[in-house]
Length: 505
Length: 131
Image (cartoon, rainbow over the protein chains, first blue to last red):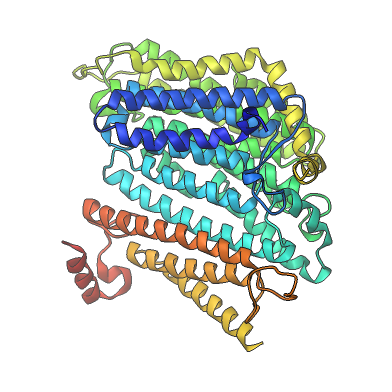
């Protein structure tokens, strides 16, 4: 057991140690606290990339916590999909942190950086864990931190949306526990790989119970992913959050999608009897409805941040259209689009913030305001972010949507999927053109507001868009990796072998 | 058999009351509803290890029938988490009431009479929560 074998636990441990250190030094030496936060994020990125290098050849690393053998102890499982999500989280965290520090959003309260690290701990843990109850615990960790981050900066609008957000998630957590209780009483295990093996042996009399548990679990994940009709909490929450926080939250809905992709093939796969592929009949219609609602929201939104929030719902819908096929091809296309849509949504939130900071009292409302300094530059950023979100060439959204369209042709309902994806793209383009022309083209005759005094706040959204350019330039490599990750996820026997046999040795 | 019936009906009553209260419009009632619901969930988790009476929770060669210790550990975790969450949501609801002047979950100010026809109790609530 060398030190390197402990790598899978580091993405959880690093932020867990960084957060209390930041809490201690922040009051006396704020600069040191910020430095620790950046160092932690960079270390996370390093760990995630190393882990990605290890698993890219198809190995599944199982890490037994406390060296307790697999079905009894808690295991962390790192495979291609988990490593990909870790890298995405670390990159997004660096960008969001940079934006928060540059716009001084982190100074509005004492505990921004500590909460940010706890949020990362919850996210990384949820991506790594191979145990269903542990998944619940990491969900709670990331939710508790997100409550604090969402309320960061205070104000009545945030508190109002915050109460709704917290109540909705508390109900979701309770349902999660009910589903876990039923599954444990049926299978006698909470380890995902072990449960996937044992679920085949459930007595015929208990099949109804199993189906109920599976549907409850899937609805909880759908609630986190903000799939229609469970999307109502998202728009208000994200639109009023501090923009840097909203940029980080772009990955929160993807946690729900990730859990669906992880749990359904592994536990409720072919052999699961009444619960085999349990979300299959409902997921495609729900995904199409949320894509339509999301981009309709983009069309009618009154401000840029509200538009970005609806774009998150729409892109999750588009992503789930691909996931709902449950085939290696469509899932791979979906995973490529997942990376793209997370970065694009974050860029959109940050561009909305950059715009709002330059327009004074007009904020990011979609009405004609005064001409402001650096308008053309910001307009260019907005255009790039809008192109990325709607999926026009040349950015990676186009490639992602093309891959999805290409992969769903093999599925029975491909006509509906094509119609919805192409139709929502059109609505989205018109919606972004409307707000863009209102904000950046027209100008009302009034005093030019004082700018933010610095142009550095453009940096973070520009980096996010640069990454999208890189994602389209490296699309061949990225989509090959995503396809391999999808194939690995859809072969649960491989990870079951790694978790139950090799880890026990 | 009666023990199972007692536990099942207790869970059922708690869930029914919790859901009814959680669907109300006032934050205080919603918080109470969530608390009841979480009690029901804790009992449910506890029951997921089967109801075994008078047996040790530790495995031993001499013991043939034992109580499952894992659900008890799960319930402990769930209790701690829900306790923290409830404390947080109480503070948040109070803070939201003080800042927005409304204790409605949708944040709108609706007159008490129009809400549930209990004008007197609403006035009392307002005085109690206002420090």
